Image (cartoon, one colour):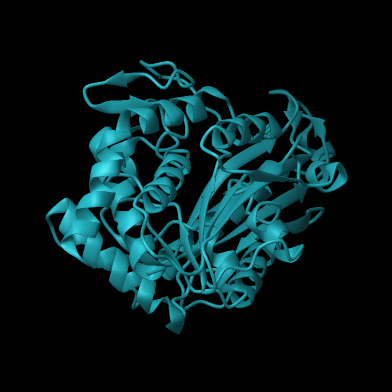
Length: 409
């Protein structure tokens, strides 16, 4: 692209940056804690703000029975279509749902407060910031008056925390969207072309309650659960010897995130529930990983009379694997990001899992790029005092605007 084109795009972003920050503050101020997952109000507010920019947002409400079955309350996904002529469609996807704020905040988690060049709030970094990045990059593209072909579509969805099937998965399944290329929300200092998969299982260990004074009247589910935990942690050590060929991804790992059981201190526990999260590198087969975990659980309690175990899958998110058609995205984003940020920004993988995989599973080349820090830890994502650097927001918006201009020239 001509230098003057880049200068025009950059200048528009700079001139409207205060407006972009205010837009992001409004995004943060409408809670989208998931659970409970009452996310329709945020979609309504987002659509209202987009209308102020001349963007018509289609509101696609997921049927209430499907939402309740997923353990949520309301989901309305948004689609904005901006057609410039014949040619390919570039989709931009960010999710508005987020984990509850938790304790320990020094700033209002729903305040959108600014301090020290940072904007604080739950979902400021993951990923309401990219509602702003993608919206204002599209506005910059249109304001530049360039001859364009193709289209930009914005997908603002609300089911990433529960796997994405009622967010992008639902839009894709209903035939409402089918872009040729996709950029999904991410961070600013790398272009993600691959990521881990995630398998979550619920293991229910059933014994028999009994009085602690006469323990022989019960069957201790907690003791059996302890055997399962020890076996799972041992398997985790073995799995970490597997290495991935994808830059930025090291090895698989397993986390025991929740344990519930027992009724009182003087009662033999009759039931214990364990929820585990197994991250899978792109080279692993999810069906083989699940079968292995089920074998580990069964073997751990094989010699425990009176114990029965039920294993239920609660989430399967497959890994993101690079598709051959992603080259235009990767080349444009790495080039412009390196130029705008003044340092080499390369393609790599990440141990996270995202909605982008749902597009790749349907043959749509997808990469991840947006506003954010070098690492999740720097932004306090999903922790107290989540924030973004405002300068990262400004620069990432320029990168996406430049990339769209190149892809649709």
